[in-house]
Length: 394
Image (cartoon, rainbow, N blue to C red):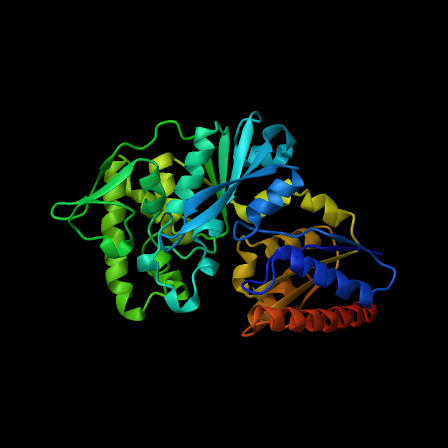
């Protein structure tokens, strides 16, 4: 029996490779003698760059960058030869297959996990580190830059990143704002400077389809998760709208960009890079799937196992486990999704979408990292035993 284990990360608990190893152990215990292969997944968030660079045998460059709170950190840019990228992924990215491609995770330099829980506040967080990594890729002659979106602490519309790439924010009284944060914004802030003209093609990989503004926009959908106090929601949204319009006007871009699906990804970083650099969005899970030859790996398996921290209806909207389950159903493979929590509506939808797929809960929420790993191992073992029994009963 061939089992493919292809989970995403369990947020703030297990990385995708860690989850894959624990799920593989559980699968081997439930199916002794099975041939288990691991294929950690990502859809643009934490670990996305590491996954893609590793598959291509690329290398890493470390450099000093600015962290989400303005502190000094070490960031990494991954480098791969374009000729080593699978043709399907090159086609999806719509880049030329030559030169060196730079790959980076936004979360690695402005991620929510980099900020202590008690200090989280997107009004005091910057995406400048992302701009510094893009600047380095530009200086080294990258033929293209792929940015994994997701898991960030910021809600600055990417203005922090653009400050490193030539954008200047100024106030008629306070003068030039250096390394500004959203708490520095006001209707009187002006945009100026000269954006770098030689930035290579930028591609933004992620699963978020929210616009930058509005009830489902970056602020209202994700602000409180990032530590924004409810009392600041209205004012933060208002100022984000003011600055988004100013950026469109400064870059001579239509304001309709604010309503584009996905513009709200990574606290509006997608919007800022799209507006200023003409960056293009690609579905992160689908890109990872093409890069990893996911469909063929599923075609060769007898059982497919995936997982994530929470399995809910959003899992079917561009997330890695949803793609794994979709392809398993396409090829008539039985599939198991193991999650820290399983939403009842999602489990019901899964049964309707893919009759040979089932979801099992292995709670990992609310624990210390050490405790979460121990609980995950036990929960994964129980889930795989239940999957084995259910498969045997069909």
